[in-house]
Length: 349
Ligand SMILES: *Cc1c(COP(=O)(O)O)cnc(C)c1O
Image (tube, rainbow, N blue to C red):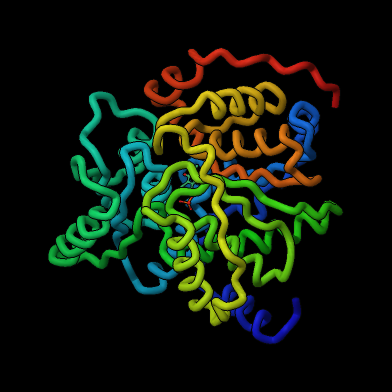
């Protein structure tokens, strides 16, 4: 834990410039009623509250990306994602708070009605462009093109990939793991795992680096909410190795990533009945809201494992945010309200 190589890497991580976007530490709270209903002691790491643009896991990544950009004298961020991207919305809000311009190149087409994250993008003053029906792999080149245009217009842009999952962005979750480990020690708990939703892999990769730096603490249990590449575990391992190298940590110290791919359903963004049930269960026992694209699928993974007796006690559910999408009728009413969900038994505090 206190060997010199790890201590030097932790110091390098601490020394990275930050933009002050994360209200750290985010709360770690026990969920007594939800725990009783699913049969496992669950603690929630609440990245769904606080931070720019109404919270979420992307603030941790953009904290480092904007920190470096401010140090470099940049004045514009160019990034990308789906129409309802939480990452794009966080970038737009962070840009507003940093006094920068924001250009978003979103996959798909201009919506008939602007709602949820897309509405917030415009409220935060971002310039929103639509890429049409392109593959995830084509978006980075479009971002580079938009950055080139900004440069030609005399601006100083920086770019962020899908999900802000660059090696530097991922390090936001290395710091987050150290934050969680300290909170667990203070609470007197030693959780075996932290369940979280995963797509672009920065959260997972960063937590693996954090686990190596902390020398202990909860192991990330990544529940895939969609597959952006053919081999997501290899993509996470590669990203974690590049993130580790940034702080001088030997990538050979990183634990192997393992990904739970049983809860994606038909595809990224397509709801599952199990996620709708898990979302209703958490909402009705604890008053905490998950979304059907990411956090609801991770929660469904936790509920399934708890019911199958596979969860050691206690366990952390890392709430990565994303609830904003419920205010788009296509996701909210269309995916949840019409799905029958049982009202759980009342459990006293
Ligand atoms: C982006 C996102 C994730 C996945 O995080 P990655 O680092 O991209 O794997 C999980 N939950 C929510 C709500 C997100 O917006």
